[in-house]
Image (tube, rainbow, N blue to C red; front, side, top):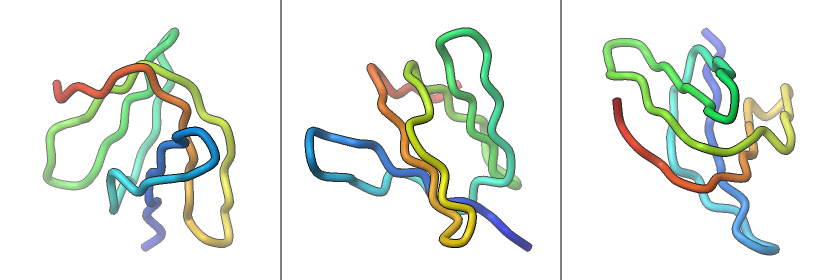
Length: 67
C-alpha cells in the first residue's frame, strides 16, 4: 500500500507533520488529510509539491486543526 508523508514548508526548511495519509481532498482553501482508522485532519493552506517516488507531499499552511 502506498501512503504519503505530509511535510510543511517553513521558510527554507521542511518539517514532517503526518504519516500514512491515504487520501487528500481539496475544499476551497482547506486541505483535508485522511488516514485509515483516524479522524480526518484539516489544514488551511495549499499543496506546494508532490514527490510520488518518495510518497512526500509538501504543504504551505496557515493553520492546522483536527476535525
